[in-house]
Length: 149
Image 1 (cartoon, one colour):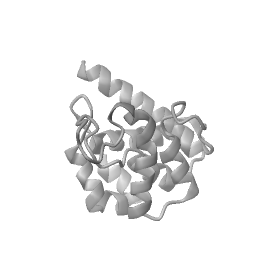
Image 2 (image 1 turned 60 degrees about the vertical axis):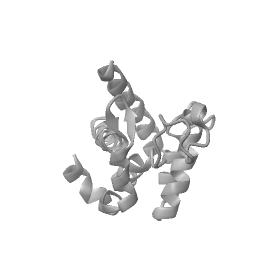
Image 3 (image 1 turned 135 degrees about the vertical axis):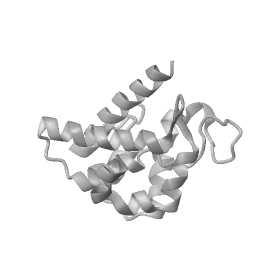
Image 4 (image 1 turned 180 degrees about the vertical axis):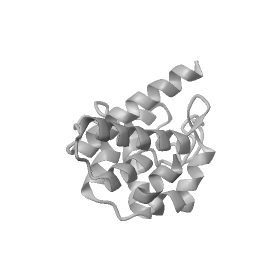
């Protein structure tokens, strides 16, 4: 998967903080790293099959960074986990903040990261890339949770 995504987002894939996402569990026994790789590949496939014309570099970069919160959200007493019971509501903003510190992001990338949890994020996605990542994330998350059970 990483080889498929590398042409679009080598800078993200090679960043030391991004590599840290391998250490955090997202759903079941799936790491954040593998989760975001799956979401990025799924987003590319949605764009390809539906002929949506997404900017693929922005699509992949945002998909890889949509859960860039850099802590284990299952550990309620972790100092970085400021809202342990409301992670679903707060992590998009935390991920966007962390991503902005490490990367130069476009407005479309930020929109996708900030709004991928819609409708929890109240404001809906504003760009096709954001909608595709929102759909891909929900699909991949459902598969990960169901497979874990």
